[in-house]
Length: 112
Image 1 (cartoon, rainbow, N blue to C red):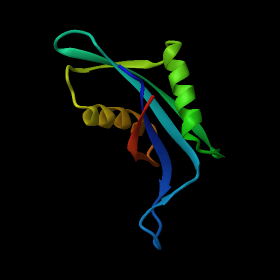
Image 2: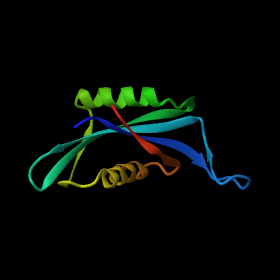
Image 3: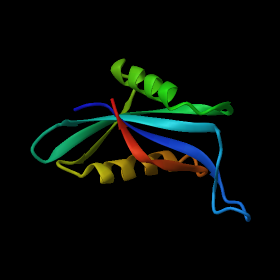
Image 4: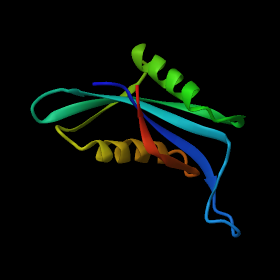
């Protein structure tokens, strides 16, 4: 399975606009799904965080998260076999939200 990516950005609710997305800060979650058995899949993922003072760059986030996944530095969770990609994304974003509350996922998912 190819490595897939979810890009998260820092955001703020402002009274004059519906939502303001910062150019700085952010995170990229790189993940790969592999089959464990007929009933379970394993999702290995790594979260690459961008400092709040640095400009967010998707390419750097992809490179960092994919490189660390290839070196075996990711975390692994078990999910039911055949879970749709959208559900996998929700699970991974929730894992990230457990520690951070000011990020919003981008609509697009990157495949590399």
